[in-house]
Length: 71
Figure (spheres, helix red, strand yellow):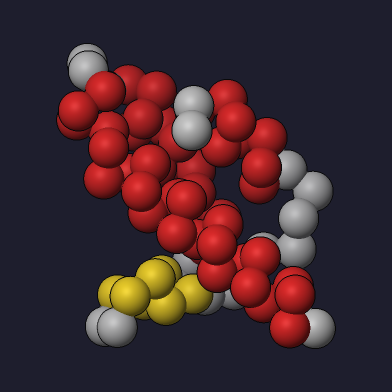
């Protein structure tokens, strides 16, 4: 997923205040988490450096999607 696709995916969706990405990995400020990860991806000197940041954002999108399906 490109950084542009990630940015677009988070526009206009209802973000949770916090999210547990993995057991013990809790994001307390989701909007700040998204903004900092997007900025890091954009400023990475190569794709390999940003892989973990992309993976965490995709995981967050999956969590939000699962939450919305359950509602």
